[in-house]
Image (tube, rainbow over all chains, first blue to last red; front, side, top):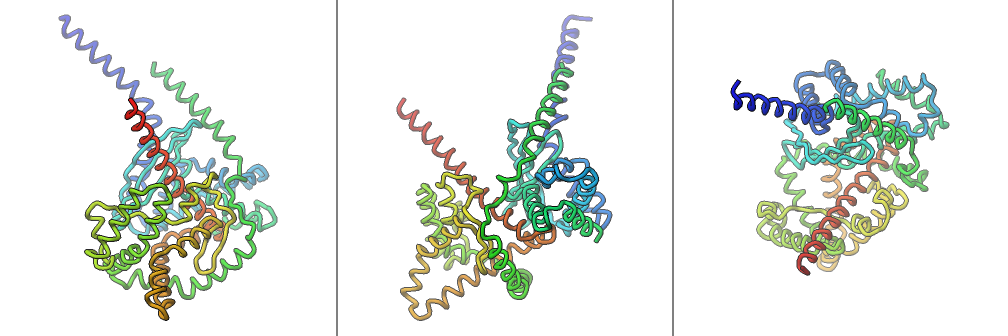
Length: 195
Length: 261
């Protein structure tokens, strides 16, 4: 083999190695990619499916792209520690159903919205914040911030309003007004989920 | 090489999980201070009754029956009347150049834009901003923007707090249009004011139908969910203002340094 060709092969190998090394971590943990693909999935579902089909598909997305157990734990706050194992499981299941229903009802029909992903800010505690804008056909774009940890979405902020934080206030207040019992909340969520 | 990177990624992820695990246990700081909860909830229930009977149906009719263009024009005109208050606040927020832009917008839209019905200034590149004294106070108060004093449910107005309630009073007092109509319209003063505030309420309610319906449907305690959402939304707006000012003053500082050199 002539020296030049040999050199070229070595060069190619080196490039390939460099690319694979650079690409692997990027593929494993690229939060903006995760946000983009999740949004695209949801848009596709809203475009093609309706009713129970849509809710099931959204639930699937929530379970694969979001860290639902962590979100539920955070939403329950200090009450999580008091809850029994059975209550926790029931709570997480009811919350997942409620969120899936909320999301599938929220977008009645696809209205031509698109998501533009912006700045990605890694934080010291392993959380990455992904800024984005939901562009609408009419009116101002809506500001969405995504919190990503371990390749899963752990929170979404709409115009600064965090989903998890709002749920936490909501749940905490409900528990406090029902004798400080987690069971009351779990039952309420289950009745709503069954409706 | 790839394996070691993979391992460190796993290690990082684990650390993140551990740290995050500790952080997710707190609740206290996230809660809104609401010492007047009982009277607030009482006012909230009256507000909701008024909303269900009168306000929301009116807002829905307005949204669905009035042509979109007319709605945009009404919004433009109302926003135009609010422009002087925004400019005053921008001065107190330490941003006189932005205040000048707002005044320029106001002058252009009030004349070429036919009393504010058309936002001509935006097509000149003068973008609209909307400021209020609640934000101005929040910007300079040395506390977390989530902390706006005690939470307050105002009759007809809705969610507020000590900071934003005070701000609203201040905006009302300095509003040139209120003072002007008071002097010019004389006896008809309240008719003008009611017309303007009424239009503002319907316009604002028509734009919040979707968000509020959603919040109500998906919460087990609507009062608490709204309290949290309001506080977070306001805090986010104030935080954005603070960050903008910080970057701006940082840039100015650097510029001054380079001038010294």
